[in-house]
Amino acid sequence: MKSKSIADKLRGKTIVITGASSGAGRAAALEFSKYQVNLVLAARNQAALEEAADECRELGADVLVVPTDVTDPKAMINLANAANDWQGSIDVWLNNAGVLAAGPFDEMPMALHEQVIKTNLLGYMNGAHAVLPFFKKQKAGVLINNISIGGFLPVPYGSGYTASKFALRGFSEALKGELTPWPGIHVCDLFPAFLDTPGIKHAANYTGKELKPAPPVYDPARLAQAMVEVAAWPVATKYIGSVSPLLKFSHALFPQLVTNTTAWVMRRYFKVAKPIALSDGNAFQTVDYGMSTHGVSGIPGEPKAHRKYLAAAVIAGVLAGVFFARR
Image (cartoon, rainbow, N blue to C red; front, side, top):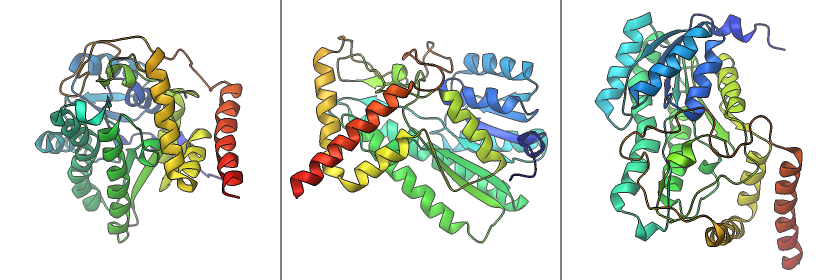
């Protein structure tokens, strides 16, 4: 049983959040604000950051806004210095900023694939590189990496995204081993399932079709609550949503089958989805729409039970089919 409450553990702590202008990052900022913390909010969209900061102050947090592009190593060092200068320490660093690009691999510019990797992988590495000197000086700190189940489950038509997430998981695992001589420094990886955030609406889209998240879709507030818990009581790995470990387990058992089935489902969806113009989304620069915590699915709160059971039944059916086919 935890002897201290979250409020006791976090009150007065300095917490840096990247990608705080919308989606899971903004939801995390609001959730942390309930515990009278010092928040440093970072993203490219300053106007959206200022709006988020006002909401957080109303909930009781002190807030510093630092517009930052995570792909710029010098900007990330500046972010860490600003946070440390503001309150004299950095207690939690939440790597969260990310972008998505969807479409056939060879029909998307290589510059776009590179930008996805620069944001989703190098952005997290830049964050860790900037904050670790402070953590080592303090001999304490919590580094949280919001990776997603995409770190285990390939996303066909999202090859650059998959490359970044698989590599990010490997980077974080290596970093954990390297930091074992520093018991007060914790590296925590989060693997949420599909979230109802504006991220998919912001995505670079070369499919020519409107993108929607696959059910069950989870409320980003659920991930935000997990982030707060991990900041208070660090753990190496945490899965958010019952579907997340189920998808990981399925792919571990039958990797090619699950990948091929996912690609088939996506191709079927593209045949009936609403046409949309090709776009680079927010990959190269920020956008001025959808700067909220929630996205387009219209499924706030807990995912409906029948959707969870349906997803589980489909996966179980696939696994059972393969098992009997092999026999």
